[in-house]
Image (cartoon, rainbow, N blue to C red):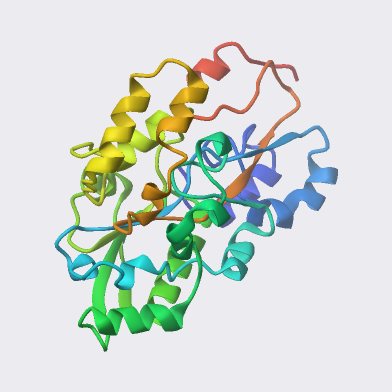
Length: 303
């Protein structure tokens, strides 16, 4: 895979790729806005489709690290790296607000931030209050920590990681990016094996249970911050045992308790994907997942 974004952009402009180069066959919003006008003349047969993402970037904090050794209401309860202007720059205006317990595209599994009660404060950006809480937790001068991550070959992931580090530093946390090769990241940090913090996207989710069980259930490999909340765990199990989708949503995911889990800091803004494919590729559509073969086995090129 070519991870040099300038090279990938040039190759796509030259017609060497039939699909967008990022999973799932998309071009990141920042790149797309730069090249879409040029493509009108260079590749006029392109087809596009916009749709909200079923995954989102997140910052996880290791249990037992300095970042979580604090009393209730301390630093982690104020989400520093969430200023909307920063996300607008990263996503170039195409974004969706979301609350705890849901990916952007799974809106029916979450509550608006304004309905989260006490947990709503976790979705604001208040660096002054964050610094005050750090001091109250015993860190008046902040602390240092590494953020384990991988680029995923995505400009959006890179932009978000840099913004997270910048805004963590604004509240007194001297965060430094610890870049891993993709395989090394997946085998360690992705599955909760890190000393301080980890940042990155998760696998696309197609159902609220898949998202919630992986993130919040004790012992799950994707529960990177090792969250162990008996109330949340009980709700997750009960909704799994309920067959009616509407009743499932009422049991668990639409619950303010999820917004109080400061050990796993979800990104409050999810992106809108811009899927792009050559018009000569017939019987094809973008796929929310990694099943490229399943889509392409029924597709063909007409040139």
